[in-house]
Amino acid sequence: MASIARSLRPVALRLAQSSKARVAASSASPIAIRAFSVSSAVQVKKFTKDHEWIELSPDNKTGTIGISQYAAHALGDVVYVELPSTPLEVAKGDTIGAVESVKSASDINSPITCTITSVNELLEETPSAINKGPEDDGAGGGWIAKVEVGENGVKDLEELMDAAQYKAFTEEA
Amino acid sequence: MAPARRLNSLLKGRLCTNHSCIRRYSDFVRAATDSSNKSQIYISRSLDPYLNLSIEHYLLQKTPADSTVLFLYTNRPSIVIGRNQNPWLEVNLGLLRNDPLGVELVRRRSGGGTVFHDEGNVNYSVICPTLAFNRDKHAEMVVRALRGLGVDRALVNERHDIVLGNVPAPGDARPLKISGSAYKLTRLRSLHHGTCLLSSPNIRKIGAFLKSPAKPFIKARGVDSVSSPITNVNVPNTAFEQAVVSEFRDLYTGGELILVTEEAKDVPEIRKGFDELTSLDWIYSQTPQFTFSTHATEEDPRERPQLPGDLTDFQFRASFTVRNGSISKASFGFGGTSPVKDVDGVDGGLINKKLQEIESWRGVLSNLALPGMRSTLGSAGTFMDTLFGNGDRISTDVAKDFSRLERGAQSD
Image (cartoon, rainbow over all chains, first blue to last red; front, side, top):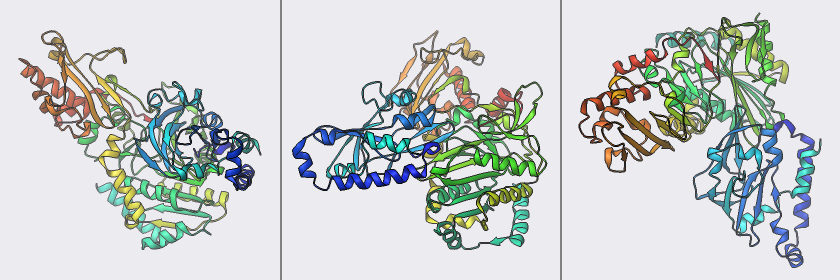
């Protein structure tokens, strides 16, 4: 989801990079964190600088990917969503699909290393579901894909932003 | 194509004397990937639409993340559909395949609608960091170039197209369009490309190419074109190129002009992109799912045009769905005298067949074993061949009839 150019400013980018560094630093002792709150630390929805989100199940084995509310708004009316055929193994940052809006084809990239196991077929027929509920992972929601995650994928998660960091990232000028 | 050759040799003569002429592709690659090369300008001397789009895609992927790139190119006659469009819906394929111009069918990687290119149309393309992307910035740059050439009424409209303001087309309230834009946005780099109609000799034929006889029968997912009345601005290609280069240099301080030749195809990544763009799977099978039906359905209740004589008499009914380019379900029959026949994997060999691989619907329908309808099946096959652009000249003449009254129109 690279396309939110209009509102992405260099300062915001720098902020995101420094927050990324903080996240990495804070997870230096992952065992201690897990001892505190077994699942909530990993169930938190995480965001990329490219405006995708991913949320893992409590056991860290599966998850859901989508694009953020902020991105959906910035894109404008989505007229077509290209989804991958499944299953598909991808590395962090690989293109897993594309969204078309306002004559623009925008890539959707995978936030982490994972295997795409199914896609939201509703979007083929009703692309506007992305505009209505981009962070809704239920039936009728605008989520993009369900995934299976291995150790590398869970590790990739550490570099992503949580909701508060992402909000700051999109608001900072 | 004699006109193409003439133009090509003209370009060759002019550009090689005025600018640096890069002969070896390694020089082009070095310039494009040089991390200190922040402002890059290329003009392609190839008229091959697939190659030009592949060079453009290479520049999108390989130029330094913080650079801004201008790429200008002209294509031989071609119809270029948007990434998520349907060629059977957007294009009169029968007319296209039989026209002496030899028009190419191209699917680009960017979004948007269908446009026509020929030697009287120069395409501009600006690649910049996604952080700096803006839909109007470079359309405005081209408007400044056009105004500098005396096209004072050029302006960017709310669809980010360039139109001639203040003078409505005859019988049409809309200003005449001269340039349409589309975009491809990736993580770090974004591309804006647009056409500019300067002196297309085919301007009156464009509307007919962009009017598919199958359109009333197809319900498609994906992206529709928005048709607009168009006009030439009557500026020579070279003057336009020079003016755009000059405006680009004003915006981005400098930039050496490099000419790109057919040899760009030797760059492995460009070759790979070229092979993909020329593959039938990309051109046709990339089409979003659609359903064809000769009659109104719950899904697509539009009233249909009347079918030719005996097909109406015998209530010929055909419908099929195409997913990922292949026919996933189909049924054919005659309403009045025999039940509509569902076609399965064996019958007619139609299921899972790629639509573009059907050479003749006459042949397909004669395999369907619908009893007692031989001659009507023949007309049905001819009718379907006309809609999908197969078959011989006789059926494409019918296709021509469908659109002969259309006046020049271009979509984006």
